[in-house]
Image (tube, rainbow, N blue to C red; front, side):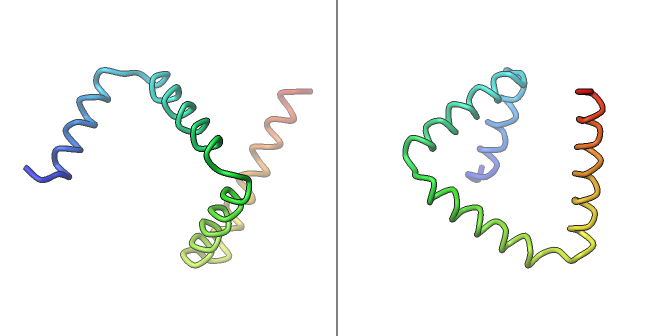
Length: 82
């Protein structure tokens, strides 16, 4: 069995044992640990890298679509709070 297969099987077994809240909790713990280890400059840099990679993979239409979706979501939020 390859390392990849073993990892997949372990992940599937874990997913059967735990619910959404479990994954939210471990994600939060990991995020807090990362925040303690790194400065705001770390987050700026990974944001720049991610933005650059995304811009290289997608065209203008992609950004128009996500902008429209974001605007629609914001409009729904505003309706529900008023």
